[in-house]
Image (tube, rainbow, N blue to C red; front, top):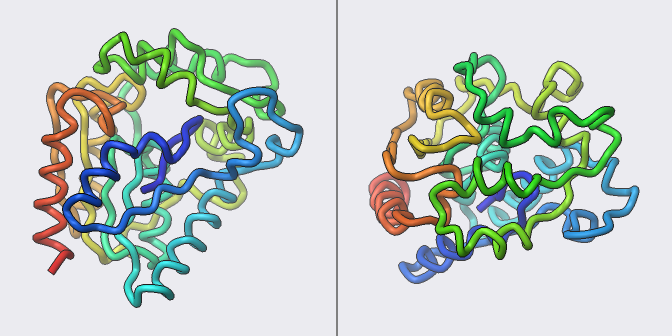
Length: 255
């Protein structure tokens, strides 16, 4: 299970626990935890790029395949969903589950001010690629946690960590990423893909999530949840999402 930007593997606590209970082995790694810290990040963090996370997760997937004899099922949330798509393209996944995923290059976004407000402190930061960034509190609560009870916002925000400006550059200004991590050739993906859309998502517009599902329709399925938002991994209604994913996995790969 691959987490999103500014987050850690802890975001998967609810889903990981449920899938372990029904018999799955679950791994929830955190990208470079020695560098991606909650406060006072070191200058070394600023060297990290999106490609580093892909390489780390590919290595982890190959280790699991060497240990178990099968490629892993890969979940990805938000930015983790983009990384999961890349791993599927590279042939290291048995199946892929994309939860409110960051879209690959080539899909035209619907115009919306909501994502810009959510990420405003990063998008409008001067020389942003040279800095470490964390979500601003208002944008995080409004754009990421809008379906999570307000009483939980402070606790979730406290677990966010700093991210390299180069990672955000690779996500927001993809023409500058010479390794073209966000470019995905869907013809190279032959494993089952499940895309999970959340209609109340303010960070990634639902229209974009539908377009991701359309990209993989040859091998994929799509489920959309009208009352969920970007934090679909742990908000009211997540139990239903978990149950639906489990049914899909049973049909596609568990046997």
